Length: 113
Length: 114
Image (cartoon, rainbow over all chains, first blue to last red; front, side):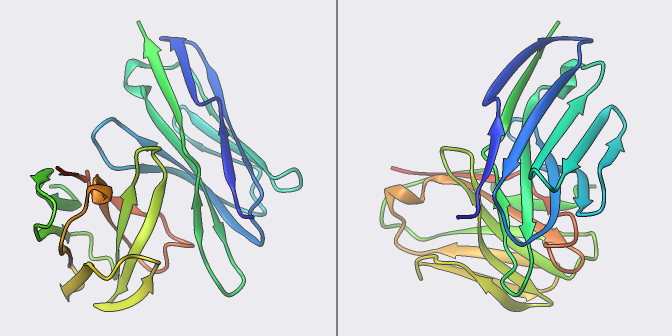
């Protein structure tokens, strides 16, 4: 069954600290993996898209990694800011005839001053 | 200058009513979508239109009818609303297939059916 699981479900960190969010997937065949940021009351905003051949991709203070062998991805946030408080959603795209986007439930991050 | 805008932001209505949600994108994208985000925060695709043609229609009750008058607009009409329809509905767009291109989402319409 195609699934995307994210951990932790929620996380609280202090402003200025780093954190890493995890995404494990069982989606096959794999096409690409994306991370989205969703602020409360807003729509998701794309942070990164990575294909099979990409191990890491950065977008400012956000760095995503992908290990296609173990089917794991992580999103690392450096020097967190209050505005990083949001839900982070991992999404995996399948390929091979019946394309589908499989969404994770998200990790809710709260950055406290 | 909102790229994908949907109205209304909040919609409270009674069971059995018919309601519509409108969506417009000014990104020049050729594909638009309706997604539903349930109480567990999972996003699930409902419909996808490419250049005004329906290309994805997931298992959605036929009480839900999308309409795309042009490639910049995709509206969602819901007949005979039920309690289980309460959710946040997101419109999105992409240039080309959503499987290879990032989705650009609107800010959602929170539908509450009482």
